[in-house]
Length: 342
Ligand SMILES: C[S@@+](CC[C@H](N)C(=O)[O-])C[C@H]1O[C@@H](n2cnc3c(N)ncnc32)[C@H](O)[C@@H]1O
Picture 1 (cartoon, rainbow, N blue to C red):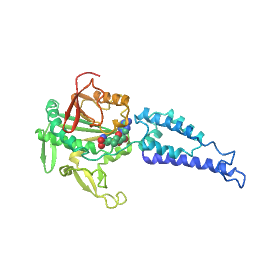
Picture 2 (cartoon, rainbow, N blue to C red):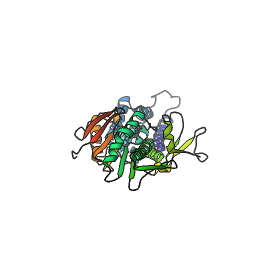
Picture 3 (spheres, rainbow, N blue to C red):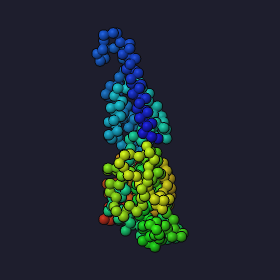
Picture 4 (cartoon, protein in one colour):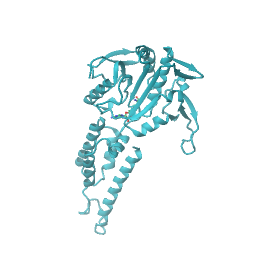
């Protein structure tokens, strides 16, 4: 679902407001132009009604997608809806209440409510810790099935997925399970790598699958270490597809071939994969309350092999303590899946 859909929706609402307002003005006696002068004006939404309906909408967002209210978008919604005739808004909110999270209008709304901020090598200390302290023992313990399976849950536009593919290839090389030739790192015969990225936003997933990023200001490349550049090649964008003055880079095939992207809502109790060795779930649980955080952490535990590693960043507390053992390194905390079944 694209932002265009939300914009369409908002445009439809605004058109509905305009026509309702227009109809009421046409019915006013000539010479009367003061606000509220016409007894035939459609019932405008009072601030209490508006707050109540917006709360209902935000509650729907929280139940379906986990995102707590109080965001900037909530205020944006309130601004847009303030002139909405009360009956139209009420009908729309109550029809939304009967739809599942898969419905196109919820999808459109969530595209606008989610924050897609991300960039390559977002936390260099964490990446270094995973490369040096986590991957060597993970690779050693996966010797029997010779496959490293990684999931970036809430991958946004894909930068984290390609980072993970890149550091796993480097980790495999350091462990003697991959070789470098003509600048490409490839796993040695028998070894495989699978990196899945999932997100609720189709728009973000589209960018992720393309794997093409522009070097615009505070964008994807704001924090890129020199050696990370090995995984990019420059790309000429077709006329009309590029912003002036921006250079575009594509993820090289030798990294990109291990990445897959799928839509997945973290509110689902059943994970899209199982047997994961490494899961990153960063900068998303901060938007959820503790009950949802716990449910998501349990779902992630279900997706992992015993001995698998979960990374959530330093700002999120581990709540599913029955299923993980905590570790603390120079790059922050990480959690090892124990054998307790779920
Ligand atoms: C700030 S980005 C984090 C990207 C990346 N993990 C990072 O740390 O750079 C948060 C992402 O979470 C996604 N998201 C929010 N709620 C979600 C949900 N219920 N299920 C799946 N993804 C969700 C958003 O669409 C957004 O792309």
